[in-house]
Length: 315
Image (cartoon, rainbow, N blue to C red; front, side, top):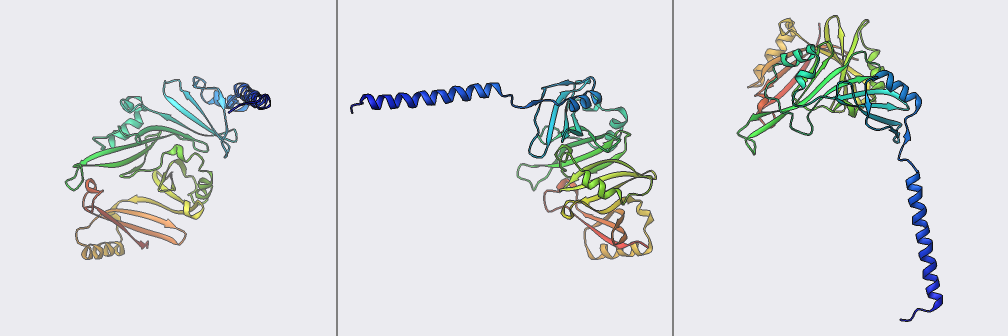
């Protein structure tokens, strides 16, 4: 194949144009920073909150929803992330060491954690963590623990079942939540303003909001009322509207009607035992919630454990 002068000139022209585009793109890429610098208003707010912090980077980039985050090392040497929405601080999560966190925690929080009786915790999973959570509109900090506990189970494939656990404690040492299940990490739900606004209208006068977790997509907001930690549920399926408020009460306080309902359930459901009594209030009224369990939690991933809660009107 012979290439004439006209063809050669055309090829040369194409190469020059392509080379020019590549050089232009390279220069433009080098000149353009991946993010803007931190806005002065945000930086002033951050420095006021964390005067001893060392920023890991000095770039600021908002996503499609207006969220940006600043990663830093706090004065105590722990890594943390401050979350801003539309340049307004919304929350900060600080990571504690999985190896010696008990010595890093405030003493009153460590005492409550130990007082739960939890033992044989396994924090080796990537899903496990120990976090200190601070939120906009919340006066208190929340300490959140997510871990697994191995249980021997002859019905499992490898002989061991790992049971997910979540504990939440406020900075006064109040135990807010301890359940044998996995909840969404708080830093996944950075803005709970809508839930908080909905729940606030149903809180008793003088109640103090302590913290929250997101369980199965629903926000559980914990508050103190006359010395009792109570839970208000805001339902995602109902546009974050308040669904109910509940708290555990002494099972010795069973009314005659509740005791009758308990005895009838036990007589009709072999293997179950009555475990917990709740006071429950929703838009339709007030109730007693009676929880019954069968089997043992260490077999919760097999068919050997089950739980049922029945509700009867409060007298």
